[in-house]
Picture 1 (cartoon, rainbow over the protein chains, first blue to last red):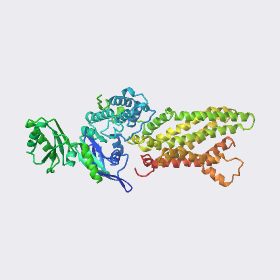
Picture 2: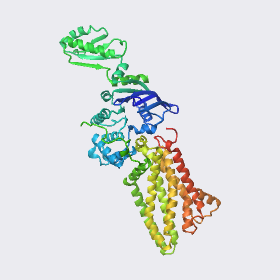
Picture 3: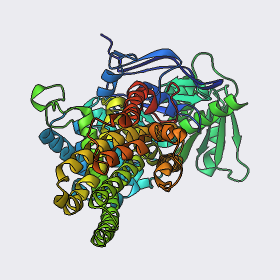
Picture 4: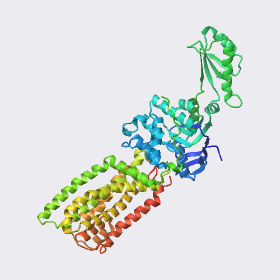
Length: 323
Length: 279
């Protein structure tokens, strides 16, 4: 029995001559939040639709919670899905909507009522349970959609752009709910989003797609270090200690140190060449340089790594793929 | 606000105690019917129909008093109107069934539930048929007023119900097929109404026109016209139920063929893109 809840192996979907998804492979475990990233048209939604049996793959295999792709009914029983730009029946109440979906998963009328009430409370909509969905804000609808995706206590939850069109407060609420799903339910969450800073905070694994193919995958740290071999940093120290700092950094031959003309108290640190092995070497070097500065008794007023964010990695891999 | 989403404090769906054995199609039918009637669409259509029916009944009663229209013909006219309007609204509602859900973005949520696509279709067809049943229900008192004195009340109601249901099932299924195939909801509804207008056209031809063999074939090939002709033959011409039964072949075949196509193509019809290509 596999411990993986999602296993996709060379998943491919063609529409005629056009390839929407090509050889997509990745795995996910219980309690893991996997960020499915990529520019528009990268194949994120198609991948989710394949894994939730809404679409049939042209080739490749996958399993969800141990159920092979051929067992679509079993898969649908153990997944929860918030589709991209999901619509809602305006004349139903939030409670009525959740009760209906709970009953579609085989819950009796009474249990469906209990589950709906609990989920509405969990997403902060208990006060609006009997209000028409037409009166809900966009954020409330997204939270209702997430609640709907949980009515069957799913093993894997697929959320396609759950924060689309939400204000920062709404985004934060939704991300908090997503953390809760993975942590408290031990469910796998596959999250498609464009909010890269939030993905860094929430996701334990990232799969970056472009033109239907997986460009890079792994933990956020692995993706950043795999993609960004060269890093740079800005170090700000007191102006009278700049020269001393330069002397300390001279002990790192792989680093080129320059002084900013417009800000003489800021030094730029850049790696001269990639280090052998994994890209994590660049982070190690920067850490060592920073440690040496502080050990020399030089106060660090600011230290900012550049090119170390997921958004940098994302832009780099997607632009390379285009080129 | 810190939101914690813990598993629901109930047993899982696999446990017998909490499992509902109600079929998926019945749940979809129940919800669709509730949506249809609580959203106001159904009630507005029925209200308009009742106004129309009141006007027609009043006029036929007045004509009857003046001996312009025989009472059996009045009953026939009201029943034919009920079948025509009932079938029209059933067709329009079913034509919205799949393409409408696609456009409103609500179809995908339904597709990822364990309910089969055939069950979704069956539920939608049943919900659409409630429009016909409600239309017929409203017609009953009007038929009662007109038919009680000529002793054909039971016959008229049974005939109208059976023939109308047969036509509504057939054209409701056609509406769902059109809805699955069309790439927009507007196209689906317009195509369905256009189809119905074509089917109703022969029933509006002046009775004085020469009616040869070709007209007879056209009549019998048309599920709506032949069904209405059957009602007329029993109610107005006094034929027995079995005498012109051949007129019901086309409505029956329409129901069987369209219903069968829905069953066969259901899995490929209810999907996010129009047509029956593999999803």
